[in-house]
Amino acid sequence: MVTQILFGETFSILEERGNWLLVRMHIDNYEGWIDKKQSMPVSDEFIEKTKESSNHIITEKTAVCYCKNDSTYMLLGKGSRLPLSTGSTFHLGHNVYTTIGKTKAIPKKFSVSKVAATAIEYLNVPYLWGGRSIMGVDCSGLVQIVYHMCGLDLPRDASQQALTGNAIDFVDEALAGDLAFFDNLAGEIIHVGIIIEPGKILHASGQVKIDKIDHNGIFSQEQGSYTHSLRIIKRL
Image 1 (tube, rainbow, N blue to C red):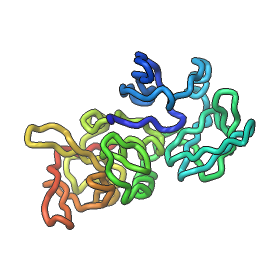
Image 2: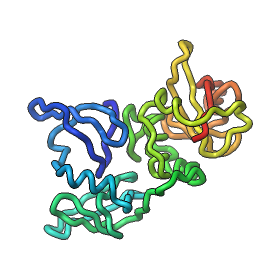
Image 3: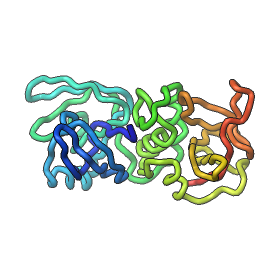
Image 4: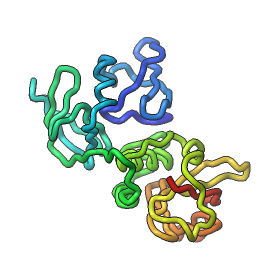
């Protein structure tokens, strides 16, 4: 698994093989295969409306929604997008759904002040390679969905995310919401985390957790040693 498509996110179909679809996500151009049963065809007009709509609503917590047409219920995970939303309702195809649960509008402008608080809500979520949901995340998936909920869409992988923003010279200058990137012995970016306060970083490694960070990297109190070597800190 390379990534996850959350409810309400759209994609283009590049290829079809039996029950499998090769798709490209619109949010970050990531490509991968999905089971056809997990997709719902929508029109180009629908996709354009979702892009143009000023009502970009996202679920803040796990939410329940039901279809007004046939009383079908669905469970939506945190971070799901509600297309063409009007208050507590949203439209999908010819169906209208009502949401029971906490939702919020995605900020039209990036709000860095909300990053740390949003990130902490994922504390203790298990690590899952390719994950982007409350049921499991990887390091860059965590960063991507947190920043998305705060109004900024980032690339999917840590190495791609490291190309964004402006570099911070010293770790002591890092502020809540900054991103810290870590490399391996070959100099490749392999990990990313979110600074939540001076000297502390939230990242997905085994599970989403908070560790200490200094100019050397991440220090794990559990292991009593450094686990990741700091490469660069970026401010977006």
